Image 1 (cartoon, rainbow, N blue to C red):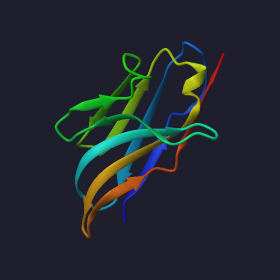
Image 2: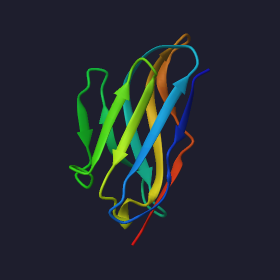
Image 3: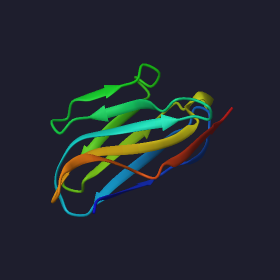
Image 4: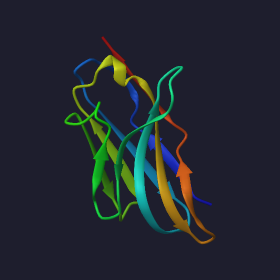
Length: 119
């Protein structure tokens, strides 16, 4: 059984910074892609940033230059550093990792962490 546990959300003023982390645990052989999604109230869940096993990254246009995704393969952890936060960044943030475990390769999701940016 693989589990993802997120941490680091909270309330911050516009212009501030937050760092989200997501740690995978369980019987893990390898992790390919690691992504962060977010979902604001009454909006569709959207991809925020992603990173491959080789370190290639991708970002939503709305966060380019403000957010940075990174991973620690030794710790099966992905982080999202968020700077210059805006009220429109307010959402529940979810991590997802494509994990090869003892039984299969599939995507796992974290439980979500709330990020609220006040104006």
